Image (cartoon, rainbow, N blue to C red; front, side, top):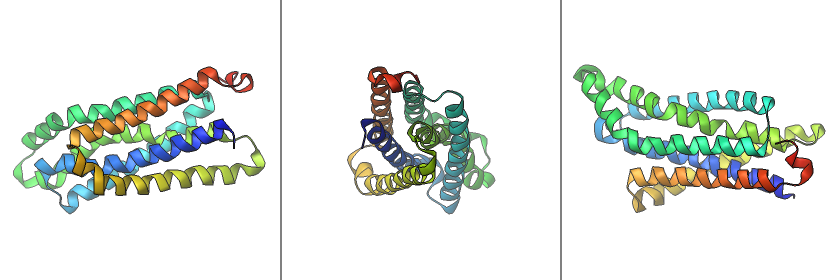
Length: 209
């Protein structure tokens, strides 16, 4: 297996873990103001799925226009910045929504509005990773289906491990804001790997950048 493919596998796998890890942490972020009701979880699941759907579409569009490891690294860095912003914006946004909604609607609409404000854009940015990786990975049209299936399977396995790791370890070891920053740091590290590869790739690959 080439270094190029190994790096793409790693990025897709870890980014998949970050997505579901962020979703688990999102429940902890909303809990102080909105509790942990079915409305909280329903809102989070819906917004994360909507964000991923938007990210899958945008990632494919961006990759088809200009697919390169350098731009991929910048995209990963952008997603890292958006995840980090959640750590700093969560309290003021949740407080503002809680104060503006009346007591009759805060339990139902509060989690939905807070989830939309905090997590839709970061999740969409994370969702761009897999389709962009497909664009960089695909090198044999005859095996495209297998390549796409492998990358999305890795992303899903990463999401499973991210869920378990966050549930059983991360939320025990770290306060929620620091845990979110850790996820952002992981994405930033992936960005550095992609940018480094884009800078020092073999000539035939560097030409794409």
